[in-house]
Image (cartoon, rainbow, N blue to C red; front, side):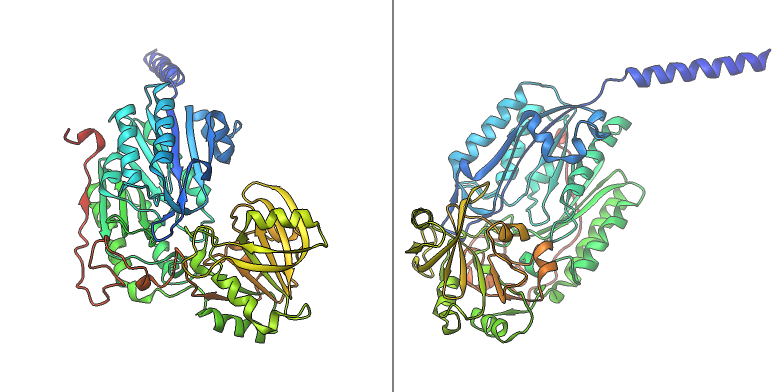
Length: 520
């Protein structure tokens, strides 16, 4: 009889626990964020129109792991507000920043309170009059949602983590691959870390370790495709498997902004102080130890040398990265210096010369002339250098219109004009060319071209897979890879590699107070 009573009691307890589990309300989680890389070395500015914004339920379309049928979607009651993303560019105007942040805060106020907030940012946004926009943004978010809300921040590894940002976020992570093939995976990790902490009742991590590492390198030297970046980032995930560690991350930082926060950072979060601090210090020391081993991910040369190599090569397509004005790193995208130099070369003067595709140069007035001339018509006019004319004036193009395409999401209108043996893509608005379809949709055949010149740094996966050979050209622009030429005035010094003989830094972990423990 006693055995029967014990069994009955166990069943009743189980039913009671199950009922409590089922009746527990889902956590209330908001979503917000702004993402852009902004070069302070470019004369360009970015306004509201530069941002592709999603609001409300449209935000879910950006995250496959939060679609209506996903497991994570069912784990919370979601309140998406505003998520804005822009092609990298110049410094964001203060008016644009205030408009986007103000709208986000107003939307957050509509559904208070929140148990959690997914803060999806890049980390390299520069704003007129602000040294640390993401730090300012999260503080203003905190003023709305309160110190108790658990904020989980997802970032690009080329972002900057200031002390203020570290204080006001609870969980934080960043990509572990460059190129960023794990972007969505990283965002999902940020969301699931937050959900796990809310569902388990553990809430905010007990410890956040932050270590500034005085290294400032361009992404083209820190790709995770090759060592030492590959081996360095391979050390991150094992740290997260330690008991008492939630997540770990290494930020390379953003090299093309002149602000005190621009440098590398390591952060580790978790509940075991020893595991968290030792993991952060090991990663920071590992980074410092290999600082002299970072090299460009591909051969680097002057533009003249790059063109000489490409013309002499029997491998095609021979790709040349026009790095200095890379719009996906923050360049204005309209520097004409490289294209001007290409068109000067005698090899490309004849229609029968080496086939070269140049992607791309903005020229809205030229585009209008090309449309008027029509496919097959002759067109003459200038393009480029409307924003960044420091290195060359607008380039004169005189040739035949080969293609016109309207309706592109970034460029709006694209035309191809053949000048000699050069196929120049001219756009109404700047656009990065990363996919094979970007070319083939214009009737171009990049795989059959002798040379393809793209405004980019390291090649993104599709271009990388397409290349037969590749060189990165040291060209001028707002994201010049020769950091010595940029003329930093405000970053913290000493900084490697600008100060090559600097003493070893203090790489001891600094424990960051939780947002709800900050002194007001």
